[in-house]
Amino acid sequence: MSQSLVKNNKLLIDVGSTYFKLSSVDKLEQHFRDFNKGILDDLMHKCGNTIDAFNKEDIHICSSANGGLTTLIVGITNTFSLKYATNIAFNSGINIIDTVLYQNIEEYSIPSDLIDVVIIVGGINSNGDIFSAQLFNYLAQLRYSNIVFVGNELDVPVVEKNIENVAVLPNIIDNRLHIVEDYLREYLTNLYQKDIEGKEDIKHLYDITSNQIFPTPYVVNKTLPLIDAKFSVVNPFILLDIGGATTDIHYSKDLVDDNIVTENEYDRLVFKKLGVYKSKQSLIFTAKSNEFVYELLMHLKVTENIFEEQSEKATKILMQLAIFLVLCKISHYKKTYINLKLLSINSIVLTGGITKVLTKEEIESIISFFYKKILNSEHNPVTVLDSNYDIWTLGAEGEELCQ
Amino acid sequence: MKVVTGVVGNDIHVVANRLIELSLNARGYEVFNLGVNTYLEEFFDAVVETGAEVLLISSLNGEAEGWSREVKLLKAKYKHLDNLIMMIGGNLVVGSANAEDIIPKYKNYGFDIVCHQVDLNTGLDLLESFIKDREVKDRDTKESNE
Ligand code: B12
Image (cartoon, rainbow over all chains, first blue to last red; front, side, top):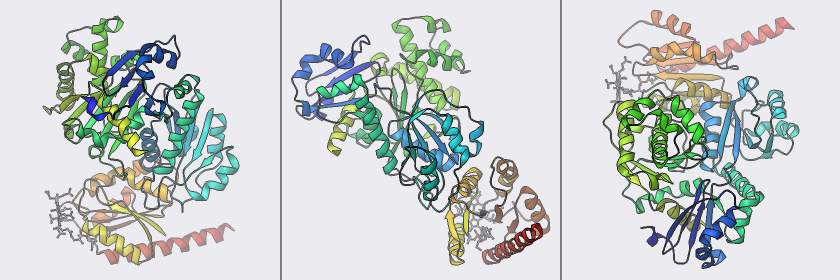
C-alpha cells in the first residue's frame, strides 16, 4: 500500500481534469469532479474533513486540471532543434500543438488557437544568420502569450530587435550538438506556475497549501527512477497514464535509438486528444480511422454501436481502445516524434482512472492482441496496475524531497 | 572550416570514424562527429544546425550503395545545401570492383569526392585540393561578374 510511503502528516492531492485524488497516511480517496462548482469548493465539499485535519504546509498539490500550457515550436531540423525542444517541452509538462520546420515556414497554416508559449530554436552558437523576415512575418500572424528564443547566439540581436517581449535563454543545442535542457525547462515550469496563479479556479487552491503546485506529469516524470521501490517493474518499461482528457506516456530512455543525450532516464510523450471523458469524441474518431479497431471490437465481443452507448461497459471498451490506440501510435516509425522499441519492453505500468475500471486480465488481453496483430509477436510484457496511485504519491514525495 | 562526419546506416565499424575525427582535427577542421549508426537525415540535419561546409560520410560494412541511392532525393528536400561539399569513403561496394566503375556511379549519386578503399590521408588531401579548386573557381566567377 501507499501508506508506508507517505510521510506522517502529509496530505497529497492530485487535481485532474476529471477527478481528484487524495492520499494520506491512513486513507486514499478519489472523487469525480463536479463541474458546476469551483475546484476548491468541490474539493472542500467532498473532502473538507480530511483537508481540515492538515496544516497548510503539510498539504502538497499537483494538478493537470488547467489543461497544461500549449506550445508551438519553430526549429530548423527534425533531428536536432525540433526534437530537442519537443523533448524539453514534454518533460516540463507542456503540450505541443505544432512544430514548424523553419525552411518551409511559409507553407504552414496559422493555428487559430491562442498559444501559451512559442519556442524558437536553431543553430549552434557559431552558426548565425538563420532567422530573418520569414520568421517575423509568420509570428506577426500568430496569437501567443509568451515567446522564447533558445537558438544560436549570433541571431539574438536580430531576434530581439524584431520580436517584441521575446525572452532569450542559452541555446538548447551545444557546440557538440548535444541537448542543454535546464534553462528552457526552468522557464517552462515557471510559466506553468504563473499560469496556475492566473487561473482563478486553481489559484484558490493556494488557500489550502503553502507549497508550490506542480504539474502532475512533471512530478511523475521526475520521480520515475523511484518506481521500483514500489513495484516489481523490470526496466525498460513504459507508463501509460490514460486520463479524462489526455494520455501521457512516460518511457525508459533505453526504448529509443536516439542521439539525444540527456540526464533524464525517462522521457514523456503526450497524446492530447486521447482521453475517455473530456476527449471521448476524438478518441472515438481516432478509433474509427484505425483499420484494426473492428477486429479488436470483435475480439472484445461488441459492435461499434458501443460508441453510442453511455454505460459502464462502454467506458470499459473505450479505455481498452485507448490502450490499443496509444500503443499503435508509438509503434509506427516516425509517425510521432519518437518511436519506441516495443519489443524490448519488459513492463507496462498503467496508472490513472483506468486502473479503477479495468481488471488486469482485461488490460492484458488488449496488450497481447496488440502485439499479435500489429507487431506479429508473442511478446508479452508484464502488466503492472498502479491501483493505489502509488506513482503520483511517490512522485509528490520525490518532489518534496527535491526541494 | 566545419565538417560533419559519421558512419552511415546500421554500420558499427568505429575505428576509422575515430581516426577520421583525429585527422580532421589535426588538419585544422572543426569536426562534428555523429559517430557510427547515423542515418542520412541526421547527417543533413547536422549540416544545417552547424552550418558545415563539408559532409564526410564513411561506410565500411557494405551498406554504402543502398544509402547513396537516397542521397539526391533527400537532399532535394533541403533548401540551403547547394554548396555543401559531399564526400564518401571506406568500402563502397560489397565484394570487389574497380575505382573506374565506382567513382562515376557515386558522383552520379551526388558525391563530389569518392574514395573507395583509399587511405585516409590521401583522401583528405583530395578534399583539400577540391576546396582550393572551388575557391579559385568562385573567385573567377565573382571577378567575371564584376
Ligand atoms: C573489426 C571489424 C569488424 C568488427 C567491428 C568492431 C567495431 N565496432 O569497429 C565487427 C566484428 C563488429 C564487425 C562486424 C561486421 N563486419 Co566487419 N570488419 C572488421 C575488420 C576486420 C576491420 C575493420 C577496422 O576496424 N579496420 C581498421 C580501420 C582503421 O580501417 P578501415 O575501417 O578500413 O578504415 C580505413 C579506410 O577504409 C579509410 N576510410 C574509412 N572511411 C573513410 C572515409 C573517407 C572519406 C576516406 C577518405 C577514407 C575512409 O580510412 C581508414 C584508415 O585508413 C574489417 C576487415 C578489414 N581488415 O578491413 C571487416 C569488414 C569491414 N567487415 C565486414 C563485414 C561484412 C561485417 C559484417 C556485416 C559481418 C557480419 N556478417 O556480421 C558485420 C557488420 C556489423 C555492422 N552492423 O556494421 C566486411 C565489409 C565488406 C564489404 N564492405 O563489402 C569487411 C571488409 C571484412 C571483409 N573483408 O569481408 N567487423
